[in-house]
Image (tube, rainbow, N blue to C red):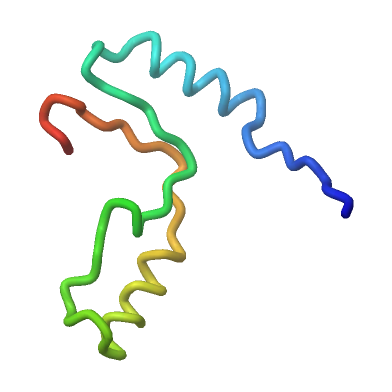
Length: 74
């Protein structure tokens, strides 16, 4: 099986993340490329059509950067 390695973080993006990491306080963490479904979950009843439609919509969004406060957990 053959694989191709993708460049998923370009040089500008790397610089931006490093600047953020260097300037944020200790209790903050920078995540990149996080799916919105890792943070949000549909409020509809699990197993319903509405739930799966909402989940597909939420799951289709990828956040380029998320700054997370580790002390406040948000």
